Length: 391
Image (cartoon, rainbow, N blue to C red; front, side, top):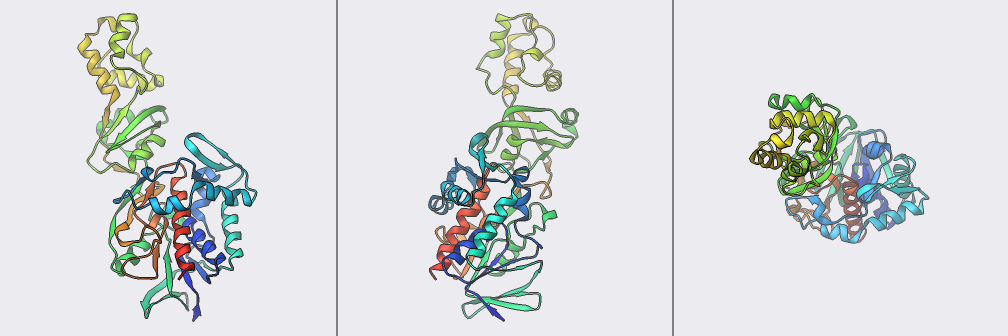
């Protein structure tokens, strides 16, 4: 049997952050992961360049049953804090749109940085070995990995959710939480393409067409690109909206987000011989499909005002009712997870079981597309590590 101050399950963004931080504060830490190498999800993120944070991070850009839960951790470990770590390691970076920060080089630099930070904290690793059992008694956790039992007074669950199973993702965190009497908010795929049924076959014929829209789902609206696919809808606007979409609900698309009220009637007065197809701010193939659906053909001067008003309303809130999503295989993250009601927002420690911590995607906190989920991983991992070091 080997003894540690903390055992971290999961060598992803949150787990490595927690291990490095606690290790550098003097804790003896073991990181366990069934994958052969750390940070597999980090390596594929951002097209291989890792969108490692977002300078616009605020709690309002996270989905959770408790919208206030993330405030403490996010407020105590900010994008500026992580950026300072990036620059300490000499990693060149750049800002893309909407506050998204990426490596100039490769996501491998982020994994290497985290591993270097872990090594500076004398963290131990057990990679490529599945956890056979987790037990608790007498204030200590016993984790069986292979034939070895590791013991520690603190256990950090950082195994994420089931999104992208080809990288080894599972629902292990939820099973473990339930085993220790913790509630789990029903998980579902998020930041994921939406699928359409046969009734929307016309739009599937537009596969590959992309246009800027405002996509609405539930209380949220996102202005970014939407992409038609052979299965339905994708693109940043749709991925964002998917986190708020629930089965059976419609998604509203504004195909003319800059158009003022009454724009079609005004165009009819100013240019009676123009057509709706020419006016639509979308690619031609999409314009043809929209006009066909609306039944507004020919010169605007020959179209009744009421028909133009109806077309304007529909173009501003075109309803699609997805029949599902492309599932965890294509989902970047998972909405839901270990209930925040079970955890301290300051330390990420379980209220009913001292020494048990849950961080990162395993928890019911899910960020928008664009680096927010990484920032939650860094912040929640850092928060747990502070508490562990102070035990």
